[in-house]
Image 1 (cartoon, helix red, strand yellow):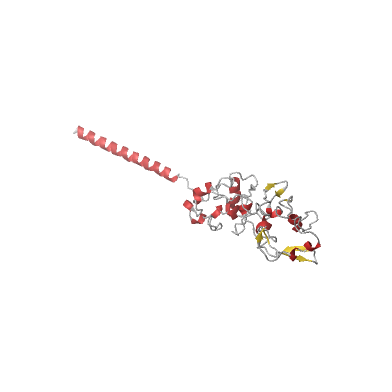
Image 2 (cartoon, rainbow, N blue to C red):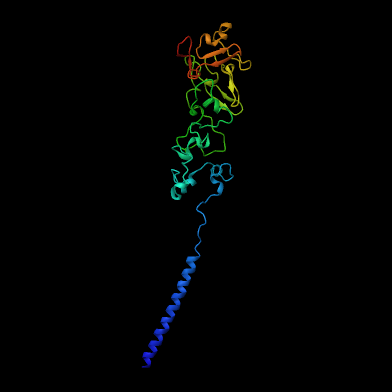
Amino acid sequence: MIDEVMKMKKLYFYSVLLTISMAFLWAGCSDIKENIPVATSSNVHGEGIVKRGAPDHHSVLIKNQKYDMKPCTACHATDYKGGIIGANASCVGCHSQPKGPEACNTCHGSYRNPTIIAPTANGAHNVHLYASVLGKKVNCVECHTVPATYYAAGHIDNPDDPAEIVFGGTLAKKATNGGLIVPVPTYSTANGCANTYCHGTFKSGNLTNTVKWTDKINCGSCHGDPVTGNPLPKLPHIQGAFANNCATCHNTVKYDAATVSWTVDSLHLHIDGKLRSFGTDKDF
């Protein structure tokens, strides 16, 4: 009988102990669960990330990263459509070109206008590409190496330096006079472009002409005397009063006697490596 009573007491003791232990365990789990930190916002950037002109605008962030946008793709995905943080964080709503933020007009021109892919505020980009009154549009490759991809060597890997001038096209190196005059283009920040077909290195042209990036040129710059502005080409071109009116022989220019000035009549024919005289069209 005594043994049975002792067994009952032990069973009761262990039951109470188990109940108390479970209570402590439940209370501990409740504390752990209740103290889990909860993010107050899903936005890891500041308020100005999409506010134009803000000091923490995403353009500033990317510039500070030396234009390396690979960290952005960790959240926004390689196609910049939102990735793991959803479509509400897509970049292609504003950067709507096929390459998204990696399109040329994002950094070099106007991201609102995909046809403007070069700086136009200073220098001669505007007159070479968009507002030329002397000749047709010049391709970027004429003066720069155009990268095949955003991260191609020579593109953003040294962004603190000015863009390299590499005469990779055919226009600046156009040979004339039956191949006797072959331009070897050069460029320096001090002197600008020299030895280019575009600016005088052609038959009867101003072979020693140099043009700075900020120069405003006239007809005399490439064809005649850059000091006087006389558009009369040098020998072996015909000289004298008869030659003062280019339009007598060439159908690409007009002379305004009232203002004593010349204008190009056709932006499709001028500076194209051909001499048009009396309606003919030939290499020279």
